[in-house]
Image (cartoon, rainbow, N blue to C red; front, side, top):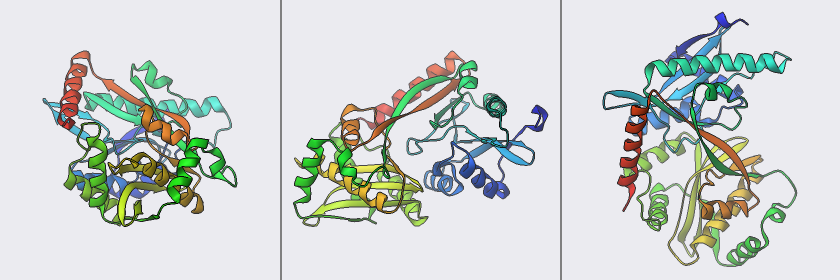
Length: 339
């Protein structure tokens, strides 16, 4: 394959099937870049999506999902927070036995994607998958990196997962389990949203999504069988709930909330433990708890046997003035969430 074989093209509706096949094969591909998930986002939020791809030998060798916006007369693309991984996807090029050749072709595809983005958008904000091995092309083009972390729990690493849980947390799980607790599916997303309101209120901020948008979006995810929701009840009172996005063999904990009672932390801990058991029983390999930047949030997940995994927020601005405008825009959004 030569450099001249590469050419950029935006994905057409007739090519969605080919795109989904590429996402499945790409080391960086997740359910969040698939047609079904993109449709949930565009329909719930009335936000258009464009997929920029690079082709070679009649196949997709690179791509990125973009959610364009416009403000101050500038076109830009950002990644909604509920899409935790939305960066560059590259073909694995495993037909070549030479590592240098594989990385060379990947970087050629990556450079073409970056070049096309620069022509169209004043700035772009992506959340890159940790499986992108070679970031040099991004570094050379002066992209900015912000390291972010998540917590993974490996579900198939021994007969008794409880042995990987910290001793104090094991005691809390057993104590909570001795109460009249039920773990069961939830279909009513209003109940989850009410718990989210209580959780965020403790930090004096509004939930990240307005109620109606949240209900529309999660309802669509459930109807398309992309997600599931579970909660724990005590005497018919919902104490904690979590909505998971299932991308076998990985599951992602996307939204969660807990009550404002004194034992809310223990309730959330117990729910996470039950989720771990539930997906282990369904032969999933990994649960990604999505979030480890706040110490108090990371602690409970890591003490359940989780390990840190790094991913990077990658941002590129056309110039310093646009970077200033983007910073103002972010501060406005943060202010709107404060109570």
